[in-house]
Length: 300
Image (tube, rainbow, N blue to C red; front, side, top):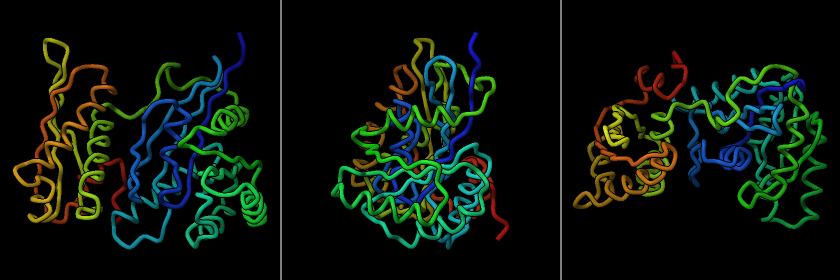
């Protein structure tokens, strides 16, 4: 029997670098929330990739790294760097359209303190000229100690298979930590909440930026094998609740219909989804909400 390899790869980068899309592309299934809004990933989301029969890569999709202002943002950034520190390999994901950027330059400075193998992944390469790509790769490599550089488009899949195979080579010897057919360690109820939060962001755009969260409060398996799920969307003000509901309940209905389809795919069963919108002032200062999101509550 061949030896097995298993390890953790932390994907870090500025908000909207495409980390979640890349995790989903590497796994081959949706395990992490994807949105055009920045800062949508709040906690560590893990995707599990099998390469052949003997190598398991556990991808840690971290929140985007930025200069935090609010308590929730500080928790997200602390979680991201914690994920990087615990990993076997750290991959810096850079959206090539926005290099140079202050956020990525700040990450590069802090990366030098991490004594882990580091990889550079240039993402969205389909959106700029090839000549410019090599200039960016050379420039970033001068500023960081990277073992290898990869050029990918997480959205189209270009370069993803090569990256997956190369990551496998960095995994240390050790037992597989998850069953070979598992794609994520997130409980279904957590993934369901993340799916609904993604649909919420898609529908309300800029009206409800980050003052909202979704929690799965109840999940019952019915006699016919279907699931009855109750979720609560928490907002901080009454006017935000009205926006989420929409005129005649149209917005919340559209969010629910879109989320239900994806949750049913993830759960592999028929889903009856019931959404409620509640006002909880200053929920972003409530330690219980942080625990639900898998974040450590900052004292300040």
